[in-house]
Length: 268
Image (cartoon, rainbow, N blue to C red; front, side):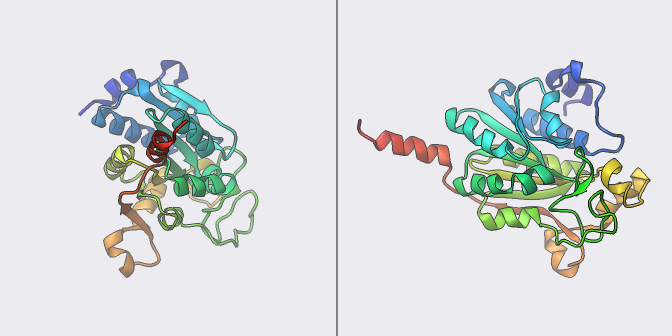
């Protein structure tokens, strides 16, 4: 197994260090898992493009020694779709957050799945618009406090992974940063999948979310993810908990391959 030092030397930009991430943020765990998955698959980093929108999670592509595109808020999947359509041979990865992906970019998420364009979307769900002020997001649990819900949010949260499954994505998984081994395996499968793959990662924002909800111990935050999640096989016995695991792994015709086939049939 590659060491963290070797991983850093091979894939990270030294000029971006030290990290700007807050203490206790799970984004670094997600980046580590992603790079380990890439290394395990033996992927060519020079053939990859990392796309992101706006938010703390969207900073991750700047740390990687590879081509990256920092798009406008909510438009990461739209930009990634354009890149993949222009050059189907590229491996395209999207880093996005719950606000960026499910809120402002919710429409692009659905149509990326509908097209089944061959990109890997890693959504870091921290229940808040962490970088832009700590507002509640489409995934914020009910009663949670935020800058825009100081007395607790009353809106029902999205279950992102189940929405993506119902929309027809061929690969969908959800893990937490407290499950790094399983997360790495899921990202590896997502990268290897032909078509739209979606990995949701439950990750803490200790500054904008947990502090406002009066949880100050990082140990307590990470323990919360372990205590309040349950595997798919046991989900029926614990309906009050968040389901984690591999939600769907199937096959479906990918958009760029269908396009190549169509073009090949057209006579000029």
